[in-house]
Length: 305
Image (cartoon, rainbow, N blue to C red; front, side, top):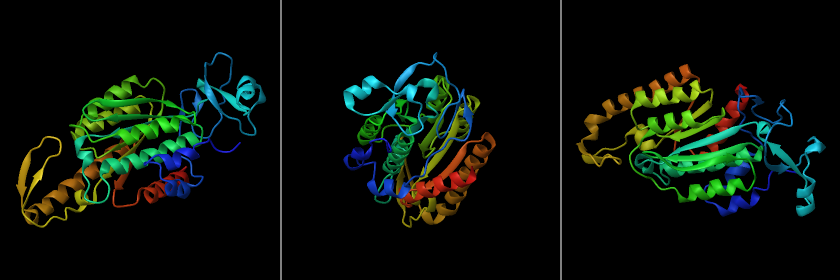
């Protein structure tokens, strides 16, 4: 059997781009640690037994133990399927997507939120292709959508369908959301965060540390627009806070140096503190095509293993 039958989803949903999938090829997103009684990554658990709870099926691949084949499923579908037990699901991944109002900003063809949705779609595809479980959490002030992780190929359509419905929301409640999730995720997991981090810096860093304290592996994609990174404005203008509506008249000629210094410090502090907490910090500029960015990142991650 080949990879899970996710091919139909590629042309049906906006945020799973066929060219991006082709570019990703056979690159995998492999978790690096050993978490809670099972080996993370690809793809066999050393922990077997009859006490584990039956969870779902996956397609049979050569090398699987024949004793786990579900013959009733074969009789119904004429396809070989393997019973998947909770302790045999190697990676449980949560994609946590910031949909607050600031993520709706975009100076180019895509907003930060749209760019993040493309990344989320590709990452969900990768996880299910390698037969891991993936879930989706969307938040602004609070969690707006929660999809529990599953590894069934059909689950990809559930995640992609949810991404289609996402719209930028209200103010950010990043730290509170992260603390709540960290406290309620009972099994150690791979946590992938897509956010512009436009919130109280100290509180967000404390919340990221909470994930690590609970032994989750964390990858943080810090998504920023090129205009936020370069501040290319030249004329006196009103700048409007997308989350509070506050307006501030600014002459960019006088504000640019101070703005860039503050932004640089903001990014450096997150990078430094994430390194201390063993959170993988990945800066993202939305002017870079998302498939190129993700392919380069995954290649670097694989080389560093």
